[in-house]
Image: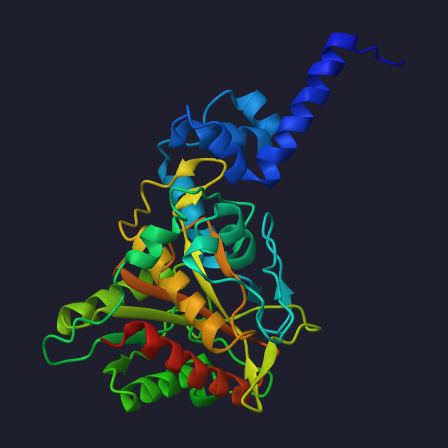
Amino acid sequence: MGITIPEEWQKQVRKSIGSGAQDLFLPGLTYLGKQKWSMKEFVQQSTAQMMPLGSFVGGAAVYETEVEDEETYQKILEQQAKDENEVDEQGKLVEHENTILPDVPETGGSSLDTSIEALRNFDYLLGNFYTVDRTTMIGPEQLNADDLLGRNMKLTGTGEGPKVLIFHTHSQETFVDSIPGDPGTSIVGVGQYLTELLNAKGISAIHHDGIYDLINGKLDRSSAYEFAEEGVRSILAQYPTIEVVIDLHRDGVRETTHLVTDINGKQTAQIMFFNGLSRTREKGDITYLPNPYIQDNLAFSLQMQLAGEQMYPGFTRKIYLKSYRYSLHMMPKSLLIEAGAQTNTVEEMRNAMEVLASMLHKVLAP
């Protein structure tokens, strides 16, 4: 049996769809047109339009953080541990619910405008430099080019001792031609090579090869970020001169995907900077996973992204924004880097570290 919708209702629906399309695909334009709203109100309204059914049923603003019970807290921690693109022990991609795979750009020269005038346009900045996972959200207050590019990422140069710490929450990540049992051909070996390259460039760095994703000899990442934090904080206490913390990973992609580009005649794995916002679209800010350095994290990754775009077009994929905090809350200058994937070779990864070291030197060197 059919249902007849009154003509007046139909007009309202058409009107809502028309305005909602602009809000969804051109949020910066919408915000400029509704400056009588506060930023919080704008985010609430925009999110409600992107999730109309959830807004209708829930009847509450997504930025109102709910207090989670212990069971939910544990589920969040477990989801954070699985939140990156994950490959199982057989090398197959594990695709989790509500997760989208990051864009894989074509290689070649850059045509992106990296001028401050272009980057001040929120829609341009978001569309060309970021992938936002469907589990989270971000607005023009956080992606403010003047703020992010105005934050000083240079090393202070004061005090003797290491300035950069490189570690691996997921130490067991390997590549297509890694040798079983040889950590030198895993992400750990790649991290050691990056450390050596930075030291050669005059940036004092140390490498931590602690293992946090094995329990009783079996791969188990359910608490890897919590275990890694304990180890990293111990190192930071031992070396108070450290200013930069880099959690180096390799990504997980489909077997048909090869993240590679040609740089100076070398086949080079592409990299991706990964930021956690400690915010889910469904629940809002995650107060029990606080990160006071989110804006600094965003500034660091954007400055690195722009350095890559200017120096080595095609080397970096879009910055990926996702829900949780990962390992980015222990230091303002923190990076989580997804370098290559399981389909890359060790040589491609080492070539990538040479490029990454040059980018880090450009951004960090006083």
